[in-house]
Length: 480
Image (cartoon, rainbow, N blue to C red; front, side):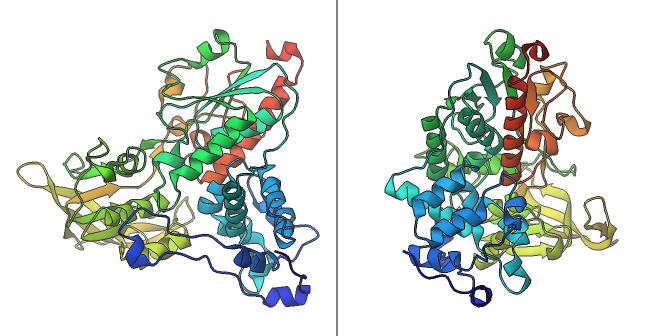
């Protein structure tokens, strides 16, 4: 699988290869993956588009520093296992990020090909090589340094924790990851639906980390089962990395949120993704029956889109997005918005619920909404939504899912008194090393920044790994 490279002038004119996907009318009936992935011919046709820039901006645009131009060149040369191994040098979860990373805002966003047409499909190629090595059963694991005798506890098995674990174990440190839930992967398993990220993909990437020497322990709630101080003083860990995420859901603070039929996206997606509630009663996890009913999701991000598309797959008669801004301000990925539109999701823009209405039994029957207009930009850089007086209306509903963001879970902070926090309960950490106020304790990902993307959390994991390694490598007196 190789071909003579076209000239740079010819490459600029080559079209981007589209991602094959399942037909919307078929996929909306099940939880099978939407995108099908490149085959070898498509991957080669896309890889040869790379301009082989002398100073590739795509590497700097990647939060984990994947050597994009190098792995793409290996794809173009037909050396697929070497390409996959090249990605793994910097990315512990290539099959995951190839599916859910917002490449359009990262590596692809700075690709020179995008100035005249479509940027190189870096994410599609990353997914292709990761899937290829898994399919042939030859995972190109990076080399592991000699044991240092130092040990690190990582709290949380989401993208930040897993990325940090991969880097630290490569440096020869003993690494043990503690997960509060019964399954590893954090938000990757409870927050992202099967049709976007099959859980088998997450499990296989975790198994690769285990093969590198990372240890895992589930059902451990650090802050309750064991404290940070106990991990260091009694269990002897030289450093701790807190990667607990921001999993505490936000609500709207409007009347009626207590009604049966109103829930957070965290609860809704966790029941479906982690607990397999869509298989009830085979899976012993009940879920609100969406069949033949009207469902609305409040929010405009990827979590909102995941929730409404999940509701349709659960049999909802109508699935709607209620978003208080316009489509241009939606933070969700363009691909996910496009897929939602294909699947029949209805979008109601410039609409905001002000009350949920229930019946005598306390069940949701409608949302009272108000129409909005956009004013001047707010702190987010987006135009502020302002209510239009007298524009209220009722929208009949059986289920409302609140997907307006999350905040910091306070468990670890509340049991670690010398751990400094900032507004909102997020952990304060040095931006260069991610060291906290407590010696030997580091923190990164959503628990520091607030809710962000998988790849940004992974970037934080790599930053923390470098900071921890520097700390462990210091003179013993500095670690006393």
